[in-house]
Amino acid sequence: MFRPAPLNTTFFVTSIIGFFVSMFYVWQYSTQWATAFATVFTIMFIASMISMTYEK
Image (cartoon, rainbow, N blue to C red):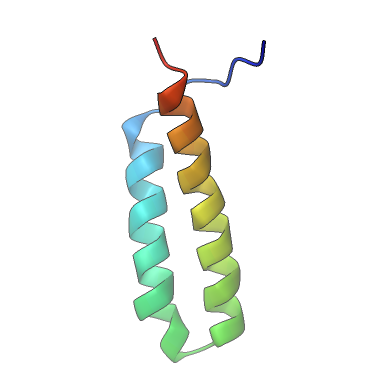
């Protein structure tokens, strides 16, 4: 069975803060960069959720 690596809470918090910064601050300057950053931080958030689901 697949066992994801345990990620710490800093990774989780960074994904949330990074998403909001890219949506509200970076969006004013470049929508393409904001979309790219938001995608990366969303993937980080999903990875942290998967890590928390399988944590024992």
